[in-house]
Image (cartoon, rainbow, N blue to C red):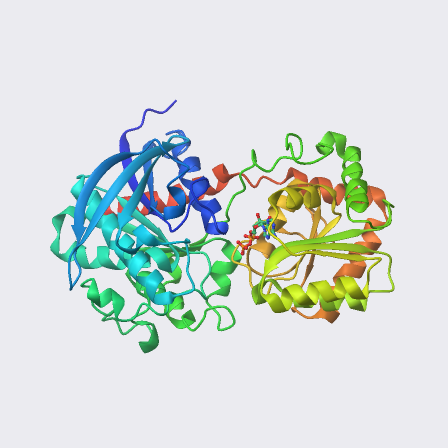
Length: 493
Ligand code: ADP
């Protein structure tokens, strides 16, 4: 065992983190990555002991659940009208120190994200600045500030400004992760100036981006990260770069994509209490009982030979539910069944309901958020449809593979990094299609129906997926390489 020869202090900022509060994929990442980094041994981290601590806003929804909190700091955040008092509470979750920052509009928020951009801007800009004030206040010198998405982007920007004037932050480096580029924090213009932050002076960003948090954070960060290697390449192109591709090209040397991991203890078909018939690679034959149970539950014909498509998704334009619906119609004469689970855009929800009305013997549309049902679907569905228009990483394909459900997805972002089409010689674990068009997707669906009918071949595809290592440890090791590079750059300067 290598004895750590120095500690690396990392402050990890996010708007949400599981299990305290989770709305989307970022909550999973912020809940899992710090823990995985903390659990690495110093022999895995080239001799560094990683002291990573998480800070999130003390959303009012968190209040009730976590009682064991200690007040560790009180201070003021500068604001042009009146300085705003802030308080920070500490707790420890699965070995990771978590700071909950309270004050300003965090005190009255009803949700993690509201539909009012100005309200969210005030809340998250306060949080971003308070996080830096806080580490200064408790005299915890951080080597790395790691922020996520637009909500915490201005902490990175503020850090860059402070480095010139405040010796406390002189040696702090920053990493900034972009989980969903189109969400930039538009609506914050004017509000960050009230907190004393100037508009971005740089000419390297397009004019329109110089007072929007996400690009400001991108400009200020020492290292830029996305959540899959392929998405990191895609955002250099006009199709995915959201107008920032030319800027991103200038940052290619300090831009990387690291795949998100999966909490493999949480998603485990062997031990999951919510699925009717547990199974594993060695007991894969048990799996079919879950499919038959689903067919019974949803009043579909009980026949293991009919391929069962599933979808588990936010009903958002990004996810291509409309493409799936049209594709299902195109192959309506084939034997298949489909169960669609999701909520979101009422127009998409209603299109799913209409498909069920149109094909009552084949389709069920369940318009709700239901984690237990999602697990039964992962455990019993044969093929999960993921026709995303863009997908920074994607979690559903990884969960599905772990549960022996084969992904059929658009070849984009993290889907392309994790799914290997059956036309490959090795590692085949799913089906990919290129253009997000029903006529293209339906062809892939026909291929999947054909392969499904060949049971030995199908089992191999399932097992390849189930055997894939999606552990957070693997991702955490990639992050340590970037942190180490940044820390060592700092020591050289
Ligand atoms: P995104 O974060 O863009 O929504 P991901 O694929 O990264 O997409 O993660 C989606 C997560 O949300 C998965 O864990 C999936 O199982 C879950 N999920 C999505 N919709 C539902 C739903 N209606 N009910 C239960 N879980 C859902």
